Amino acid sequence: MYLVFTGNMNKNYKSQKDRIREITEQLEAGVRAVFESDAYKAYLKCMSKFHNYSLNNTLLIALQYPEASLCAGYHAWKKDHGRQVRKGEKGIKIIAPCKYKVELNDKDENGNPKVEMRDGFKVVTVFDLAQTEGRELPSIGVNELSGDVGDYRRLFNALTEICPVPIYTEDIQGGAKGYYSDADRKIVIKSDMSQLQTIKTMIHEISHEKLHAKEHIDNDHPVDRRTKEVEAESIAYTICQHYGLDSSDYSFSYVAGWSSGKDTKELKASLERIRSAADEMITAIDKSLEKQLKREQNRASRDEAR
Image (tube, rainbow, N blue to C red; front, side):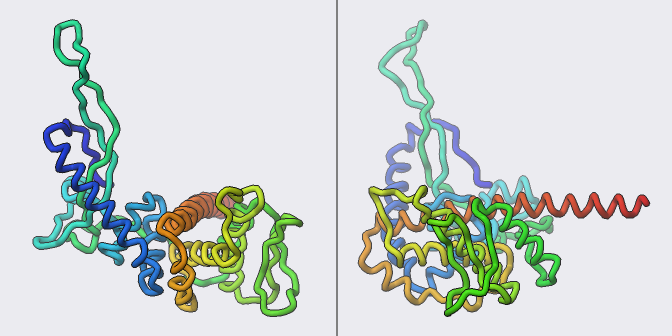
């Protein structure tokens, strides 16, 4: 929803480079800070709302305005949504793609320097919905589950549909709530759990299949078991947040210890895997929920016509 710059960058190119450098340094410094337990939950909550944003922009929003729910540029709020950014509000800096002109050494048939458009990036300022006032917006949030059986059944069906391996329920002995078997290519969920716990466990185990099945492993950059659990639990928390499922029992007090021995590149790689997997799963779940709703509406229409 932010504006993409398409004008000539030559005049301000140096200042744009400086702004990109500054915000990149802020990102690098901020990655470590994200892995404090409270900050990590705030980051995942932010990602649940901006799951289709790039990793860098998700991090930038979480670092600057962790409560953000919907962001747009100053003019976009005014022109497209009939809302005004309140006076004194501090904007959120993110990185946007842009086009800029470069004069080449070659000349055209008229003797003028040839110009080429190139892709680049620039720092833009956006504001959260809470920083604006004006016309009411249509429903913009995710569809929260109300907690009744029908809603949970839809989500259960959606997860079963998007999962590339079969999901079974069994009486699992011990403390495990579920597991993914790479050898048998299946997910097993403990039977007789609450609906909420069943859904959470399904998301967690599907995350393992999505990221940690042998066919998805990067042999040049293997991940240890602890990292796999952090990634799967982070994805589950993010998706639960997105759909309004109770996530009060999630604790990430261990992430500071897990992250302490890793370099920034490793940590960003895990964050990108978490973001990408959560985005893909949310997108697929939404499509399945929409199809289910349409089928239910069609059945209801047929029943009324009888």
